Amino acid sequence: MGRYRIALMQFNAIVGDVAGNAARLREGLERARAAGAQLVLFPEMALAGYPAEDLLLRPAFLEANRQALLELAPLTRGLTAIVGFPDAATDVYNAAAILHDGVWVATYHKHYLPNYAVFDEDRYFRPGRDNPVFQLGELTFGVSICEDIWYPDGPPEAQAMHGNAQLLLNLSASPYQAGKCAFREQMLSTRAADNVAIVAFCNLVGGQDELVFDGGSLILGPRGEVLARAAQFAEDFVVADVDTDAVFRQRLRDPRRRKAGEYALPVVPLTPPPPPAQPPLSPHLIPPLDPLSEVYQALVTGTRDYVRKNGFRDVVLGLSGGIDSALVACIAADALGPEHVTGVAMPSRYNASISLSDAEELARRLHIRFMTVPIESVFQAYLETLRAPFAGYAPDTTEENLQARIRGNLLMAFSNKFGWLVLTTGNKSEMSVGYATLYGDMAGGFAVIKDVPKTLVYQLVHWRNARPDGPVVPERIITRPPSAELRPDQKDTDSLPPYEVLDPILQAYVEEDQPLAEIVAHLGVEEALVRQVLRMVDVNEYKRRQAPPGVKITPRAFGKDRRLPITQKFRP
Image 1 (cartoon, rainbow, N blue to C red):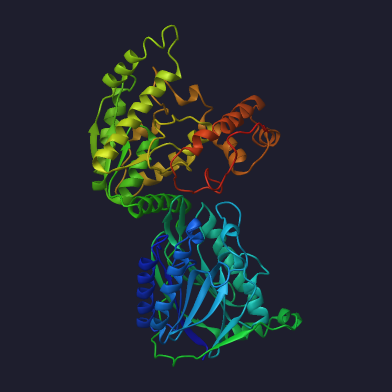
Image 2: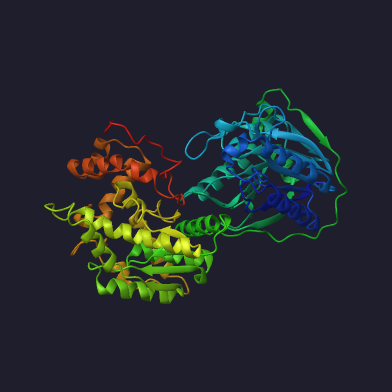
């Protein structure tokens, strides 16, 4: 028999919720059985959630995963299921359990442990060495985990070439960054074509602290063609029929196999269940999102899951009448529903009247709650309290920051009183150069756009305004020059280069680690300006270390992704 039905369950696992994740796996087993699938694949660390971090150092957590697997195994009668979990049989491994016809028959251990960017797997896991293949009737399949398939000569290559596996299964928890979805699909297509094998890739979906997993699970044919594609940023259940005879026919024409080494991989035989009578399936092919849709959905997913998984229902944010808070309000309303979002305008003596009216109009269009809490009397009280200590000193950023800190205090008061999570509204450009007030506009529980450069903020707002329910952001918010409005006639360009100049410098330095001379040469910007920007980035590490977490969408986000000492004297 050359036709097999496989299922992929792309779901939103919650880190540490072993019982809840196991319940989702039981649901997946029943759905696979009902669909007539012979084999069902789940994501990497499906039982534990990913990344489980130092939970993996707790014996009770590891034991809870083992017990959950033992309880799942009998539910696989008539099925083969591949489940990701942390295996602590001897050491601790990032593992996949092969559950077959009611029995836990084997375990695969991940070979390649990523220890770069946001990954810390060397801290927790020992690398695997064994690489068996599994014989299910006429079907031979191999199992690998995430990073294993990113290497051309990794375990899947050996499974196909030396184990004669026609089907390569990969469990994954591959976090999102802009552009990664297309790159990953191209890589998997190459692996399928190079190994003349069917590749089934099941990815995690959902937000976990700073990370977002985008789903987009795939099944690819032996020429690299996409046979099935799951949704991005949403749970999905994919069922597809794969033809192993097509693999055999194509391999007959592949001379590389005749030149391969002679060694063979160990084979684990599995008793095949009788094939059910199955009508043909329609292809499950969800088209990929465009680049701006991808980023926006990542921000929505990350915000929704951080709020919900941490037990909140409602959020609050300061609405200044500026474009950053407007974008955060849009994301929050789309993530949680407008009834769960409150925007607060907190005008002082320096706020233009149009800022308040624009904030109110934005709230009306988004259908979110809105309130106005003037801070002038509180600000005046601060100034009066500090009059004697500050006597003889001219006003400066101290008085500007007082206003931001008053607003931060008020938002935190709403959080305490009503149980609302405070969303901060600073973007990556501001966070990079420290154009933000510690304990002021940085005060909050989640920084939605902390990894979104200012120029991308504008693009995302234009994208959101073009949606069927738009425009939701008033045009004046987009066209007004950005300002913190903390002193008379203040503009961001009083302190910073224009964002279209600043953002390429920040990308080169923060994300690409280019030295000063290279940045000057590549961008054609004055050396003094670049030097000033780089110094601002370096001396503000202490601020970023105290910022709330936020969604990673660039190749190198502040936090787990970019780790520099606060106290250091190296200058590029």
